[in-house]
Length: 120
Image (cartoon, rainbow, N blue to C red; front, side, top):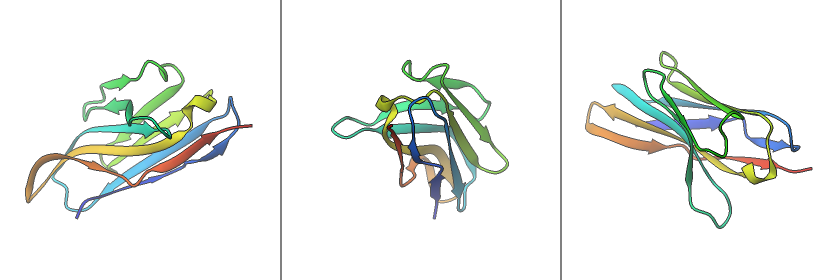
């Protein structure tokens, strides 16, 4: 059974920083793209940042320069460093991994989500 477990959310003041982490566990053959999504109340889930197994990255325009995604392939982790946080960054942040297991073809898996609240 594959699990993605996030950590690092919380309450931070505008202009502050947070670091989110996500670790994949279970019987995993390969992990391809890993990504962070977020969903604010009343809004659709949106892509924040993604990183391929080779280290190529992609960011939403709203977070470019402020957020940095990274991964450790050996530890099966992906992190999101968030700086200069704004109230509009408030959302539940979800980890996503496109991966392959011994018993299934490539597919997307989700973490349970971690709340990030930016407020004074």
